[in-house]
Length: 335
Ligand SMILES: [Zn+2]
Image (cartoon, rainbow, N blue to C red; front, top):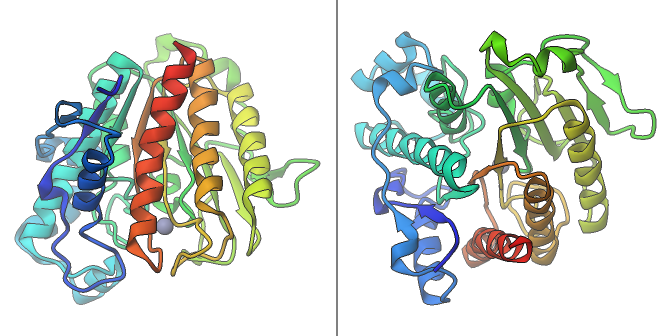
């Protein structure tokens, strides 16, 4: 058995018809994890759908009402880039519930994977880019509401910029401070390091890192705490170098009580919606790097999956399953 839980439901399936987003990937990951022996049936726990009150911690009442009554405008539906249905709303509520459970179990046991989620393009008042509900933001706000955390960090390694995350948790000040040695990296330091250690404030602080391809969706990328704008064709070695630098810089400024790792499979060289050149092995090293850094500092980690559009869907499944393998290896090593 794994030393952590995998949150999963067959109902994570997104009913969106023929689409570049492989809606069946969650079921395929579940099947592969079992068949390969990486996981056993008791490793999985089933989520409950998020409550409307949870969704409203992030999203506006007006947007939630539109979703629940099927009254999005054609433009809003187009911007979401997935066809609206009441069943799809249910699937996103469930996915958000899965991320709440993953955050809960990560805070209890150190690590948890939601075999779904990472819908980082969703904004408070609208959906974008296959994302209706920002499950990770919902989970962070719910844990904060329960008084279980004040400082969270998102590490977004999907090939696309985490624009929704940055929109929900904007850096507070001093936008646009480049790292001296790194043309592609922008820091948006808040100048609040001292304040961050003042836990009496009770306010939620979220430090956001986004490593993404510069020349890719979304056209407008709102500032994260740290943005790494990667050039086209970035390879394993270059990517891992940037990631290591971003993580060490972030952890010098900010001590998170929960790290939310958004482990997109789309930096893969064979991805249809990505333009980076990472290999399957490189992506596993990426997972090991993030998880190893968190483990060495005893930071609890919740993992979500975000995008993955490989020409062969099996590759996307392999990359996502490797994240569980990496988690098992890193966790085993440190024991
Ligand atoms: Zn993506």
